[in-house]
Length: 473
Image (tube, rainbow, N blue to C red; front, top):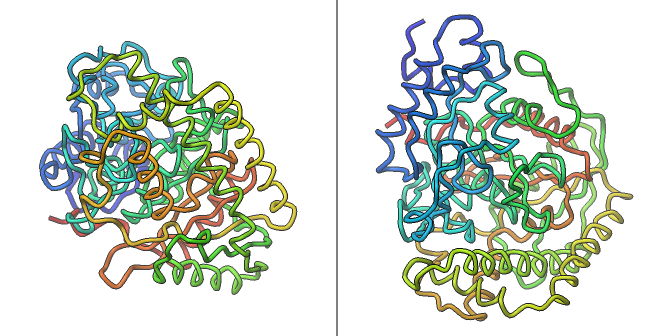
């Protein structure tokens, strides 16, 4: 089969891999199409921060031909899992000048490659991942393929933009306070954040953040996220060729969390998406109950306290190790480092206790419910410039204001990271301005397969557009 743009855009990763296994398309043809699209759309998306053509060609030479995702073009977030032949820059000017080339794949990246994925570049992130929008000072600015005036989310914004624009069918992403799920919501994608300890982070362990961070992919189809999950999860590795079937979930007790914590403003369209999703589940026989947001206020507060400590301590450690010049880091990174240096050992211990308490508070709810459904965001997808990281000041007040912007946009994102629970975002409807709407579903530890099954239910009952309009430009 001659690979046309139309064919390429019509396929998810599992379909592309089947083409390769059947001999209909060569991995090189898929790679060439992805690279062509990436370069053609770069000025419109700002999705790519590093081009790694030699890495891709090496992967083609070592490609396992019968792997689950054999020959699928792939992009790696420039934060988290190390990729041999790439550099870990995290959109930091200092690292762009001084970071060495990585000589070893992380365990996660090795599993991605063993599954047949072919990385050819790294995707744009906000500096050190410290924003829910991807607009690093050193560039490129990452634009939402649904509306280039809006953010693609963060910190996996480059990965989200690349998938939504049809550059690749899936891309690596990481999540320490919503960085998989916020871009998924912003760009109309599937974003599964696995539970704590379920995805390997060695051998460098350079993205732990006190156990808050998790890594997987952003994708356009639920079965692609399931395939990636099966490739990399620590236990129960799947070795099947081709995608597995996602069974219809048994009837569950589902809590609808339709309001954010007290004091956080809510956009009615996002709440409406959650209510519409709840009605679909109820119509399928699941038992729905309204969950009072006050029952989660303490857990949400603990979540942001923990992220404050672990995120700012990580920034302080980076400054201590790198010794950057004043102009080589953004204001918000300096503000985070300033906060981190001010913290004591007792503050760190209390943050660890916050993590434990948050998990315990969620455990009480898991006695009553099997899943918690909520809007993915509380506010419209931000315009570029609404979540600044420069010109903000470099003190504690600037950092606290920045964290408040996190809470106002995605009030329930950090809750999943700090409690350790898995959570998934799936598209559900569109806003009046044509931008995607989305829902978040959380499950107890070990609930990733259940989340994927429920997401597959929505994919069937309320299918979403697979690509943003920019994909067809």
